[in-house]
Length: 530
Image (cartoon, rainbow, N blue to C red; front, top):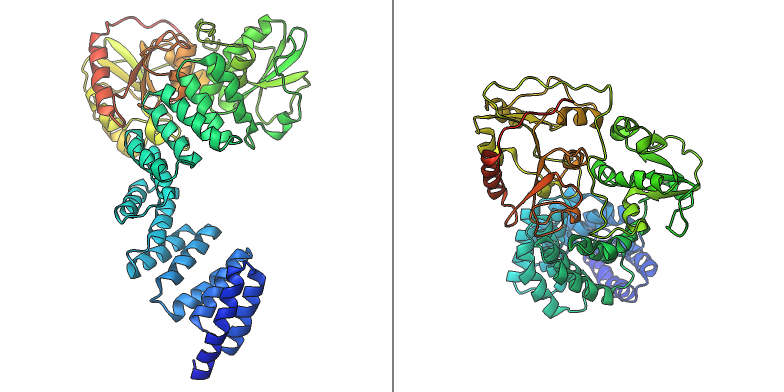
């Protein structure tokens, strides 16, 4: 660039900066383009042009200008920082991370780059790196409470609610008006089994953000976890305000709000979330029929044979999700039925079994070793796509003491078993592999009826065991889902289930020790015929 061009660029820079400060982004872009015509390739003008285009929503052209600026003067941390932010806005996380790392290499004290990098690590579920960068921000004296928000969220994602409390409280000293910090503190208190204090935190958050669906939903789940079902279930209905919770074909139907008796009406009950939710709340279909309703049930594919095979004691018709919806007078989510039926802790319809094995469905298990006094079904992990699966699933390696018990037969009921897990199971003489996979929950029910005990983490398998009235043990993380409540080793929803909870976050080894003790104390009993 010639001296004349450099002088022209310096003359043009103030006009671009002035327009950017005035938020005249179109004017800034035009001024930068005009100045670049006189001083092609000037890094500062390219940088400002990129910023203006970003604010105009012209992401790709903003990236082009910022890339040119960074190439023209690669030693400028601010160029790489802003390029990283625009890459992130486009969804190019890897490129964004590379740019932010370059910015930090050039300027290790660039706290905004470190914060943005942490946010990207968290989005990629690299939680250790995210936590490290956020703690580095705080160690360097950052006093931005947004760092505390992101760090508390990261710690919650890691399943460490115990570490959230001091971080949240320090952030609230800086910014007591931040609803997100009160919310994250509430989430932590909820997950360490202090729902009453969690509710107080959510109330403070709602005072700051009264229209937040997410805060209201978290508060509702804390009420349910505390056993305050009469308040919690009606409050839990706020989840239906979230986009996509009810698919379009059903949303067009009139929703039953409990204001009229179902007698003589056709009521469509539909699944909403996971298989376990549908299994838990399908019990309300029979209650609606007893009140005189004609009941239709829409369910997931893997539940169809099980639900349809219950006969007219469950529903008048069962059909698979995404099929044409039959005519009905009203519809309700299965998860809404406890609120509509005004369920409280004393009126839970807890009689089991409310599901039975399907007549004609056979799923013969291989014979157990002769020395086995107990036949156990085992599920140690759930759907990896579940948001909380990394917290609710137990590594199979931690259950090695269970696999080493000499007088039991262990039947893995897990749907997906990876190569390392299969090798660990095969090394145990107690393990008996199924001859063929379970096609659906009708097969799973038939298998469970041949077992003495079902051991499962918080998955649909646990719900099915409880619904069938089969003896079972549920292995729970410390911050277990609301339906398992707190401070109890039984379930009011499933009388046949026993709960073993982590004493502290991530303590699956302690859960395994208590499970072994319980199994050693469990007498052998003959399994019922299917």
